[in-house]
Image (cartoon, rainbow, N blue to C red; front, side, top):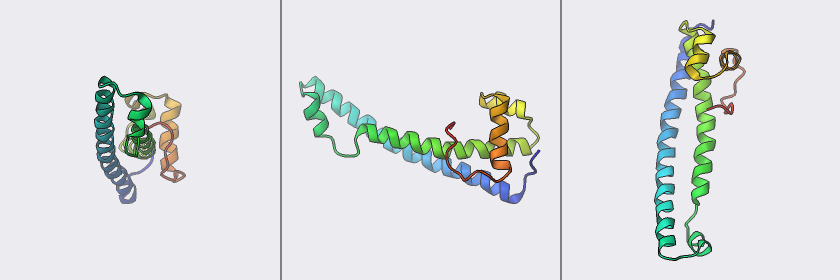
Length: 129
């Protein structure tokens, strides 16, 4: 079991702080995408064809808002997930408990803990935010 050190606690708290910031950014971006989607609906109801409606869209396009949000949440969320798993393990939670809590296999939970616990993680997304 990994021991919780002040450095490790700082990493976990930092990952959580980054997640909070990124969630706020994504919410703002997705709100803008939703507003634009509603505008597209209004244009379509008014009889505007798709090409005209989309050409009038100011960048970033709806699809770009969505893609950026997914990418950033995957990256920041993956970092948080690894740090959280490691902190829970350091606090005495078993790999099996972490797996159940996260809804993943025991093997995946073990990898999450090992990726952060041995210092091999570079902070990039693990594809499982």
